[in-house]
Length: 522
Picture: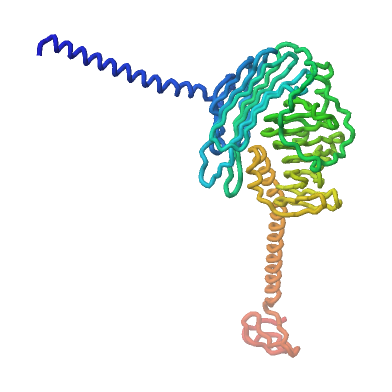
């Protein structure tokens, strides 16, 4: 082969090799770049400090790893971030500011985890909203944007809410959540991933004039029918919530109270008893609570109330309670709807607390229990201690102990049965499970202490009786031994024969000397 052809053939092979190398590098780059971008977009829930980002992804690690595939916040300036956790719930919370007139938006996409053995998928939910508040923290419902998809069979759901914020808005909340629900032959559960964004206006907004033609009110969490709402016996409340910009707000918020918020997630509202629902304000951890406060939790929301004696109330979603705490030693909580878990210590040492429901009143002092108000039936479930439950219709009381539950209807009829405490606790957050388990263990230790005392006392009594018997037997043996050289008495009353104490020879009755050894006899 000529030299020129050899050179051309070698150059051709080199060019093909360069092409293959470049093509391989391009494939690797195209494949790896999206993976690296996905990796950097996944938020670390254990990061300290929590990163402030406007987009990303994360998962719920409780059971099946339901994921927030992506979220994106449009508009506003984000300045803070933190996490909210509970069993089956993870929420990424953002705070910041916005400028009136700009458009704010939130986009989310979620995917269910993998169903396991004997798990039956019940459906996926997507819930999103934008809510606006004025300077008095009153919700401007005509501006609310809401998206709600329930019980979808689709494995993934996504959507976007957006709104151009008009002048006069002081606060905006953007919220989006994805929920996967399932059931097993023994229980039901769900996992929820959520993003919440709370933005404050950068400048003092001008008041919004009332709308001439308000939009139809967006659907909200279901409220109990009027027939299920009890007639509260709360005394007239004198507490008034001043506007946040009122100079009296700071002093009013510093006034002493026996209860405060210990934790919040989702949307929790507070108002004064007797006011319209329009008066509800958005609750925060530093929102003070006083006699006459009405606390409402919406869907996928909850709250923990902490009392000054370390007692706690955990309020689940879709619940309404009213605080009657004017007299700390005779406090009362009115459960209008929903479920509350209670762990009471001593309620200011000598005090007590009643939970009043539509059909019954639970008198509580130092115990752990759950109160439920559903469909006009009041239910009390006790984990440790004893609770006196009084039916409103009849006035009759029943003592409910640990492991027992009592359901009371409008006729005052109550059904006392046992319930599965472990299965009941499975639907509550880890905090409730841990505190309840600790309270039950402490109750077991206290109840076992008197038994130990009785057993020890019985053992001591038996040991004492044995010692007394042994001593009596020993004394009896000593009494049966005769002293040496005495003259025993025969049964007929005559003395027996005499013997010499020196040599032992028999003696006659009248002898004064021993004839054998000469010993003088006494």
